[in-house]
Image 1: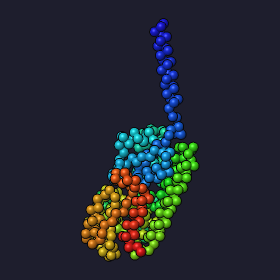
Image 2: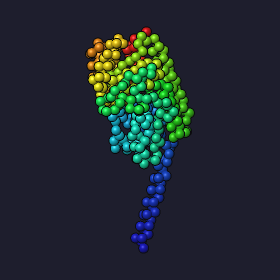
Image 3: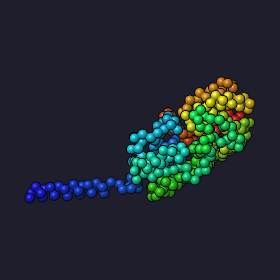
Amino acid sequence: MKRISFAVILFVCLTLVCACQKKEAPSSPSARKKLVVVTTLFPLYDFARTIGGDKADVSLILPPGVEAHSFEPKPDDAARITKADLFVFTNEYMEPWAMNFVKGLNAGNVALVDSSRGVTFLKAGREEGGEDEHDGHDGTGHHHHGGGMDPHIWLDFGNAQIMVDNIAGALVARDPANKAYYLANAAAYKAELKRLDDDYRTGLSTCAKRVFLHGGHYAFGYLAHRYGLRYESASAVNADAEPTPAKLIALVKQVKAMDLKFVYSEELLSPRVSEVIAMETGATVLLLHGAHNISKDDLDHGVTFISLMKKNLDNLRTGLQCK
C-alpha cells in the first residue's frame, strides 16, 4: 500500500509541475519581450527592423553575401522559422518555395506575410517604351520573357511603401498592444521613401540620356518604368542565365550607336559581362545595387535600403549624364 501511495503522490506532483510549466510559458507573442520576425531579402529585413524598432527581433534568412536568386532554405532555416512569430517573404515569383515550405513545417504559430499584397506586377524583361528588345533566347532553351512576372518590386518606391504597409499590418495583427508604435514607425519610413522618390524624379528629369544598360540579369525594370527610362539587361530575370554571343554583340552595338559612356554591373555577381561590353566600347563600369542582399561588411557598417538607393541615384545621374 505504501508503494502504491508513493507512486500516486509522485504522479500527482509531476502532473502539477508540468501544468505549472505550461501555465508559466508565454501563450502569445504579447507575453514576450519582442516579436520574432524572419525575413527573406534585405529590403524586407530593413523595412521590418525599422517598423518593428525595439519591439521586434528581426533577422535575415539569407546569409550576407549570398546571391538571392540561387538561395534555397536549409534545415537550420526551418528551425528558425518555426520559432518565429512572422515570416516575411517578397512574393511568389521571387521565392516560389516560401508558402509551401512554411506550410510544410506545420508551424501553426507562424504568420506567413506576403509583402507584395496589393502590388501591380510587371512582366519580366519588358522594356519601358513598348519596344521589346529582348528577343531571342538566354542559352537555356527559354525565351527571355518566358511569360513570367518581374519579382523585383521593391525597386519601385511606390511598391516599397505598399510593402511597408503590409509588414506593419502584420506586426499590428500579431501585437495589437503596440499598434500605435508600429504605425508611427511605418508612416515615418514611408515619408522617407516618398522623399527618395521625389529625389529620383527631380534628379533624373534633366538627363542627356534616357537609356541605361546593365551586364547582369533583368533586375531594374520597375525602376526604369517608374521614371520613364529605357532599360536593357544582358540576361533574363534569372540571375544564373548567361547572355548569348548574339546578345552581347547587340549590346555592344547599342552602346556605340547611342554613344553611352557607362554600363552597369550589379552587387554580388561577377561584373565580367559588363567589363566585356565596356572593353569593346570604351565605356566605364558603374555599380547599380539591386538590394537583394548585402555583404557582411555592409551589414556590419549599418548600410540601409535608403542609403543604397541614394548611391544608385548618384550613379544613374553619372551614367545618364544628368545636369
